[in-house]
Length: 252
Image 1 (cartoon, rainbow, N blue to C red):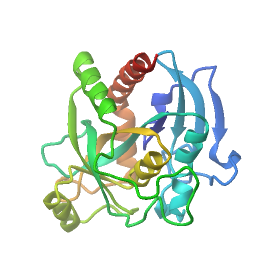
Image 2: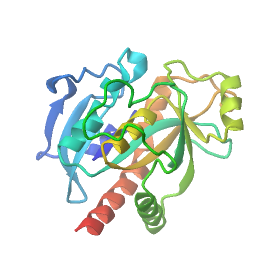
Image 3: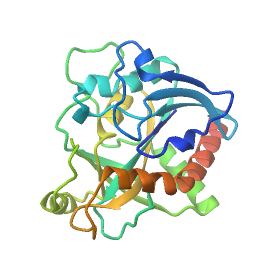
């Protein structure tokens, strides 16, 4: 399965064989309200491999509880999915990162201060989850090899997940840099925890759509980030196509 972040919906294509299920058609799953997040589950394919696309996200800043935000991860597990690749649009905290760069996530910092595992125990979930390796090492190797093979530049880094929806202040960005974060966004961290807790193998990629506050020469806007995501999604599509094919070969 692939979760598509802001402006990345074109990665899912639009083949005639796709089956689309809106979020609100799934019991207990709210409608997505953020521009750039279509809020639908697509049953389709990529590189001739069957793929479930989660096209869009729910965010805490929309007023959703963390358990609603991560419900798609639990749904994927129930559908028999074993591997999920999370994608997101992110701001560059590392000044060496440029707009359009793709960053393979190696670690994360949860600054939403909300846990995907809080609340009543759910049968089949690992509540006391070890997070020393949040992301699957085999997936990371596959992504790196695929990127080299097709010539897509790939960086590595740590993702800081913030609550949003306001962009970070310059002081907050300096703090994140001090804590060795490389990119920052408003999603993903809870999904990683939830996906791991239900036994999914997890990989994650950030598409840099802007320089973070203090590094950007202009004011930040969600509309600009969406436009950049759409304009630079081709590299992400090429990489994901290779990764999906390679992962399929490994499990064949």
